[in-house]
Image (cartoon, rainbow, N blue to C red):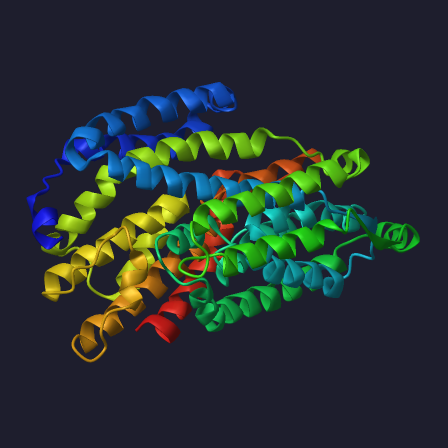
Length: 449
């Protein structure tokens, strides 16, 4: 395998479609929002650039590379689609009193739930009841900002279901339970953000008028779960991803995808229309994700192969903390899922270059955790630390901008539709730079040095 890999030459220009596609995803929503809002335009961009990459991959890397990536794409979209459909069948109805304790409990619940139903699922499930609970208050912008920090990003750190980058890692061989080992970093960042939010919300509550506070008390309604049977279906998704895998289950990918599609179909058929209407359920967001990621999966093939083969020789990264900040910086402005794979490939390239005989492949990132700790002790330690740093950077720093992770913009749009005057793109970054970057510096000091 090593001789075959060495014989492959990937020119820099073959990576241009990947770079251009990611730049388009980052820039076009801001520079041409009306053009970008139509899915046909997204599909045009994805097809053009993804097709250009496929035209190079076929004759140079072979049809097996396209087939392998195609299967990963199908598994990726089936998981996201099933989570999207099933979580869209659950609606929390009610209006609690908007105290700092209640709001913090909402965020804490979302920070835990996100790892098991995905950051998108948890965000769509909880943002509407949280906004309803706070509808009598005037100072709520900070609540939505922290919701994006916690529920739409940081909370999805514990399982491959939580955030798309981690599921891509799972598809490339990272064990399902490995991400549970990130619980210390997750708990530290989540706890710090919840404590900081409670202080800010307690101060904001003092600025509310007596009339608004009295109205908040008078309009209380207990929380009621509609479509609650979908929670059992979500548990089924978790079980399917965790337990349907090779070698215990032959053709595990096909079986798992079939189970997930069946669970989603049951949800669609059994959920009352009133629940979907209350959730404003629509197919647009998941169609958008499917179209863009079709292009991303195709375009990233030559880019990932180039990084695997050449990153070690470039000498750009060597320490875990460098991988954390590099992955996080790109995840802030580009989609964090391909960014995770990009730096996973860099880690493979660096280790292959610095430690002879490892034979690691970017197609099997789980290999970073399977290095012989006796024969290659230093490489085994570094590989595990690299993967931790890349995972944390991709998940945590998607919160740095509105475009860092898919749910961010969705939450912003829902909040604005309810009358919340959300910060501008750079106004939001003032929050993230001021609050998140010092926290991530602490993560670096405590866990990555």
